[in-house]
Length: 423
Image (cartoon, rainbow, N blue to C red; front, side, top):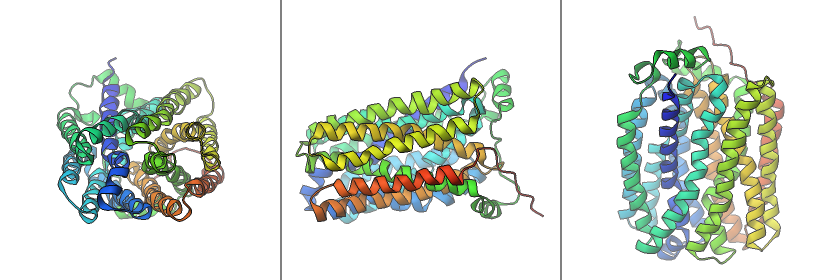
């Protein structure tokens, strides 16, 4: 049996790496942008969050569209549009126009993660879902390992606009690759019958729209306790994740007084750890324990909660002015959050009723990205008002506690929700 499915996982993972280049380039350029446009910390927080406005707003419409239209065409169009939006950021002038470009980028990238989750549900049996999901989720962390130094170097060489040009070109190259290579399993000519049967018999989600129509299915899944347990828990993860994604370089530059290039290299450390824990614990270990016969719900839920508890280490960074100590606390927090994330992303394909993986994933990601909007704004105004990021880190810890409680008490199991009977 060939491993065509792992080639698709690699393609999706590369896409997420490049996708996150376009999200984080503005974080690396925080200091020169603030200097160029005379921005306060609060204004920069608004600018950092602007990507999330359209990205979050479109999650549920995009999720239902994914269930109706499918992954292939929505992702093809999205990759072309996000490439154009990134290059647009490099040529506009003024804070207002940059916000417009970031809002366009958020709209174009809206299908990325729900689409990756849905494609993984198509292409992988349940017993391989952990590692397959971590292949694209870890890519978001790996992107910071590669992208932060790359963009930092580009900014040093060609100014902050150069960072957007470099990442925009890479995005166009990926758009071409995705157009050529991605197909759903039923239409992929390189997929052997043996591998196709292995995928289907292992419990992969079927392609096609759920009966009853988009809106009725949306209403049905919104009433499910498990969907809300997943959504609230994952949103709590998202608050801390977006805080680090948006403000970690700025925190090191402004509070720890580092140069752009030095902060870029410091930022790499926690993201390397996050990438490794994502793949090894959130991916390989989950699948290994389940294959050894341990209860799948218990395995996923235990590791999910442990990862969130480790995320509480973010509070430790609130009480130090030593950059090395701060990075240790942040690395522990991000490492834990990182391996909880692919488990969270694998759950929509496990619990969603037939034909609604995109919808469930988009509900989860909508609330997650509402927190992604809030985190940089709240943290920016706290930093501007207090002169320190400490209180901002403590707020993130409180949000994580709420998420832990949601996973524990609102997500009793991870079995597929029974499909509704519409008359």
